[in-house]
Image (tube, rainbow, N blue to C red; front, side, top):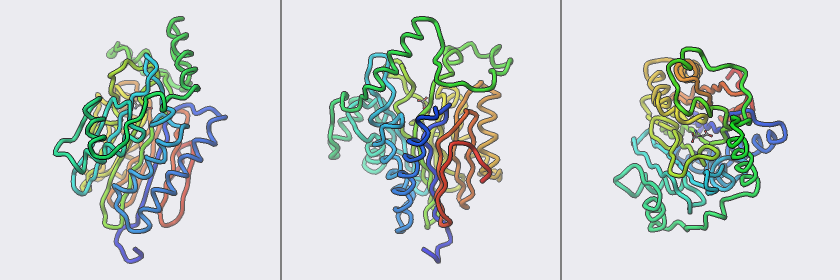
Length: 330
Ligand code: ASP
């Protein structure tokens, strides 16, 4: 590994929102555990794709985050999960959406990538595909936490009272041109918390990979799919461009195909540090969106950006490991 041309690098995130003080230690600890597990794969010469799957599996298993067990609930009180991963070397992707009976949807997404000529499975078809390839189907109730039942009840009470979700307290107002141009319902519900998880990696062979997994948005209508598992939106990887994973208010991210937008900037020569900032600025200026992004180029340069009060993130390189809750100079 010492002689390889590429310095293995792994970035992970655990959502971008106004992470309350009492939840910050758990977010940082979760991010660190994911980094340690994922980076161990890269250190022993493993593939970027294995590293991101490993890191995201750890985050899905951690009930701190909106992925796997502990995810936000749908309006009818269930957990519905979406996940995607992409191998930038082989240009292969696998995704699942609206799955309710899988503990680790990112592993089902990996099965789709490896074992199917298709890219994307949803609902019962995705669960059956995973089961037929050896994954256990569980009861949805195993993924539901009492904490999330309470959170849903609180959101519904506020909804009934005609109040917006109160879990985000962003400093900025939506730009005036957005209010004029975009009267869509999501503008009105932009204040949701975002605890989606993701990872991007570069391995010693120079391959890039990305993975994103989510329970979606709190109180979502059953069947709703967000940006996280849509290729080029919440996740993308191409060795000739970059690897990216996003979190945030999904509908604006989808409309801008923001992951691909950011990796295209890197392919054109923009440094990932700048491309990430430009992408989040574009999200906000164009549609009033909020979120965060990790972006990693094929030369190991990386960027992180968010326009929420905090983002749980971490990075591991041969030089060591760093985690944080705010964007810092990289
Ligand atoms: N982007 C996710 C979605 O809209 C939510 C999140 O990032 O927390 O489903």
